[in-house]
Image 1 (cartoon, one colour):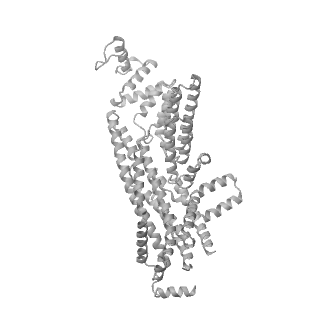
Image 2 (cartoon, chains in turn brown, yellow):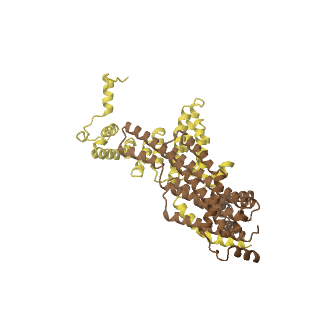
Image 3 (cartoon, chains in turn yellow, brown):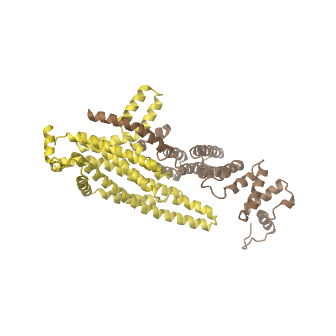
Length: 307
Length: 268
């Protein structure tokens, strides 16, 4: 161990112990290229198809309901993609680097292990960010086109029926309120924050996992349990009639398992609830707190790892 | 071991923070509360997994399509159960409640009333069952959305069209006055139905007269018909009667005399 540290210090020339943003960026760009080569962006075509189909279902429902459905499917798909990709891509990257021996090449250079981990995380998050922006653009085009079509048709009908201007405005507002709004950008940010937390937890898992399959499975189980944690605990505590033992187990469970459901606040934004800026900031802070902790924990494991 | 200790310390720091944030997010409706227990019990395996996996909106959309399918095949009880799940998953989505009341209160009742497979007694029993269910759904919906004009509008339609209860319809239209998103006609409708509610005729007359005097835009045929009816019923002195002609009387007269209506239309 002491020899390792000495070797690393020697490799770093005894002068590069400061974390370098440019080295992190170089690794992040490499990760981005690596993931693009895995054809990860092809799914955008599938998403566009799905949204076009949902946007043209023509159900016997109000225009506002149909727009709401398009929004929910779009953001649900973005959410699903973001966390799934965060788990799978992060779990695959480190084992693949070991397999390809790229890791040895990188670590033999004056690169800190924390820089390597941060570079990988930033690379994955870059792909997620680009994909989310891409999906949001596709969604925006479809929802805008549908809103204009629905509002136009409603306006024409109501004017033809001789309805009062105030009522027409109210009906048109009901449709446009379900259309494209700047607040939906915050919903995309919320999805991104959630995926950043999931990715940092998975990067920690992949530092001690023996295979990427292990990280993916454990990452997914953890995601499901972390999402259901609050619901499951409240039911269990309710059923147990205030038992001390259950309360204690519940506490331990809450301490060990991350609360992923907390990061699902995009749901409320999509449904049209008012955004409170201080809550968005708090959630951003919480995500950074989570990501920072799990990266530090990953470093703790990764630092001692022999390759 | 050090990893476990770090996880425990991190957990102890973040748990109170998470708890505070969760309360704030739930209070601001950005985060949904866990679905009710009976909703969980009724969810199928895949929908349950979807809900647990944080895909609540997608599960709700899937169930919405399933409900639409039940509507297409007039499977009302299945539709009722499915909407129970949808509103359990997304209670804050007002449209789900409105659709639920509409399907059960309007569509299901109309379907059983016209069904050839049912005897007259069965038709009445089924009609009563669905209409009571729709009213009950409406009450639950208003508990969740106490300031909803759309939900009240839908329940008022049940009292108006299905139960022929002008007093309840008037009460609901009255509650809609001043609510956000309520349509401009609700005040008129409040008094229109009050006019047919036994014991409330005087209040209705005063309300309708106020609207009549307020603007000429309110001099609509129904408003005039209702005032004319109340003038007779309440024995209002003739010099206080409104000068407008009763539009229904005009039609009745033309029908009696066989005169054509404007445009040359002859009434049978």
